[in-house]
Length: 153
Length: 169
Image (tube, each protein chain N blue to C red):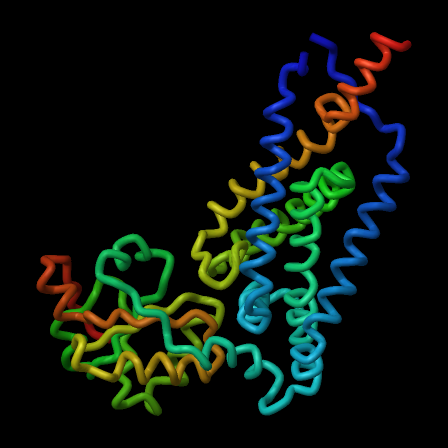
């Protein structure tokens, strides 16, 4: 029998992976336009805006793929949590500086306000926490281990 | 139901895998976008800050519909591109006057009031009026990143029974 939370854990993993994959794809499709959005945060120098725009979508894509295909899930959740925390700090800085810009979290067409983006990132951070901490509790490996203990241990 | 247990036994392995994921992302990102980065580092075709506005200026300013204006109000800067006389007669609430026909007189003071990261929605006298579009292109060239055009303009706003503000620019 599958433990309680088994399906929620996998759903959470797939959702988190899907969100990161989607965000990475949208940003990665037009790097130059995304660089413009990074520049709107007014935090980095000109070249660094481009470097971040070139790298970030691919990290998100790889994290998304790992989560979806259930490989290196805890490491991917760790990176996802790191990214969400960084985004939260950046969005908080927008609020503090009174900058009214689109967050650009899902590429150039995303017109979420910083506050909406903060709430979304908090949710994603909670999901990453859930996926990371309960990986062994709800994953197939854990169930297999429990079954092996029961029958062969 | 088995009790929850948090397993931290392989943290070094997970951290190493996380570093590999990040490094892999950095590597692929740099390789894949090598031409764009080279162009950016050379500042090709333009000055440093101007290059960042190129993606926005290369595409047409995004159109905004009447229904969207209400939702965007407070989050965007409305810009009236008509002549000052028409602006005084009536304009969208909170709109700034930046007449395209007298742009050289007003641009400098406008740049001190608005930051380039703000979202601008420009309008003029409706669908037959090109000033909003021309002004949007000009502001994109000045480095504004998010410039949109409300093509229905003041007539559509007024005819829909929305509030109108009258004050000197």
